[in-house]
View: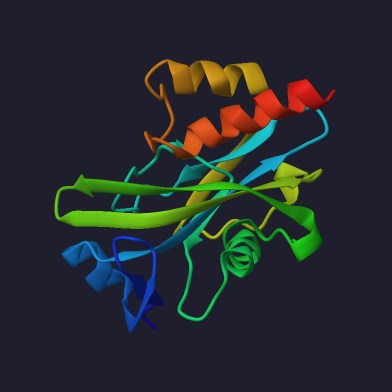
Length: 181
């Protein structure tokens, strides 16, 4: 069954319209997406390698969890749902912290993605060898040290998806952590 999403205007306001994710990508309709960075007690972030069958960024290392906010959902609900679907990780509302939002617009071949992105962090210990990966979405996962991911981001997204804004929120979160220690 095709995913349905709420359509937003260019200011992020709900229009009252609902469309398929596919139509959004064909016509560049604005809608919401979420990203979750799962970070362990060592400060490492969990990355997922996108499936080779993905239309955008196939086989690239990406954020821990990400996806569209379905029609009628809040961002935190989508974050919890996507973690369960993609990695088999059960998160509760109390496990995630909202760290910011940004709009993004990218075009790749015939796909136009116009998103209002919400970013979350989940501080969680996860045994990556025991995750239940959603094969059509994720081919593998790994933990990466804070300094290594920051280096990749600053090196023109070397080896990771070039989702501008997204990775910068991770850097800002790490900077905040350093200040609060």
